[in-house]
Length: 235
Image 1 (cartoon, one colour):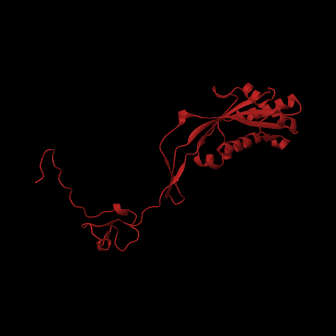
Image 2: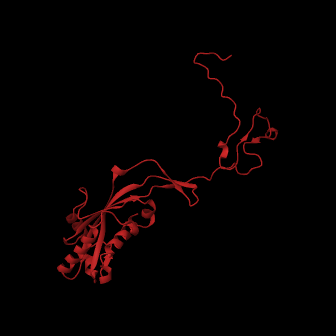
Image 3: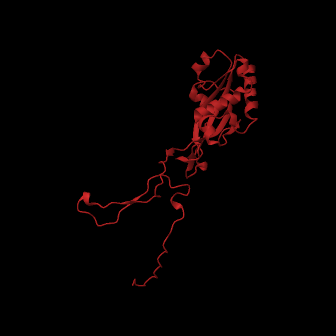
């Protein structure tokens, strides 16, 4: 799921026209060594915090059907995670960096969710809204100054971006439908296996498929026995 969010962010930031002007969009950690090796104008989208949103945890399971409408699997509920990014611009002059950061900010605040056209993989399959919040982070997320200190670099203007994305639940395949009927035997237990009597298979005669109604079709039924009242002896 994380790499799918990365690609959606890359596509959204790319719509600002940065790549057309030769600006790279990368997801590297902006360490001091990385900054020294950088040679082209760059927008760095660094993921530094991942936390589950436990308030959105659900229970139960959903059903997965194939193209013919047959049940093929059951999937657990999606679990939601908050991905927090530190977005920075790198250029030869501070003015250019501010211009790049302004372009990114204008693009990200124009939407409150990642556009569906940019979602791939499980994010597209689930069909759920992937929320996007630019310009702020969660109250429990590390501060930008702490992130820069951990990276060993100097404090730099940055934009906090938080994405709320679902992680697909575990999918378990279901067994194919049963096509053979039950075999019922009613006899005293034999002393030897070869003495076991023959059985009767419960299925429609001369038909391999029980039909659209299955075994729930109409058939002759006996009247249900009368219920005994509590304390009444059986005759």
